[in-house]
Image (cartoon, rainbow, N blue to C red):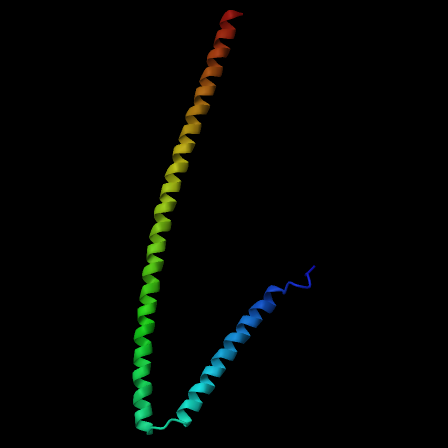
Length: 118
């Protein structure tokens, strides 16, 4: 049962999608308005758009490269952490095996003594 204050997950996703679409349409409308009302020639506007496109491409490339470097760093940290945890678990398992073998050996000795004493 859904509480009145809670929205189902699909409605939250639709809201986020709607906001994204609204921002995209608003950005496009602003860009078209700017181009139509620009106080410069078409050639200047095209040159400016081309330069901004190159600038945005370069910035995006830099951001993607930084994000990939961070992902690689995080992956390496997780790998090292996972290996350390696996080694720790292996050591704990070996310790438990030794303890159990000691218990079995002690029980066997006690059984052997009980048989010899009877």
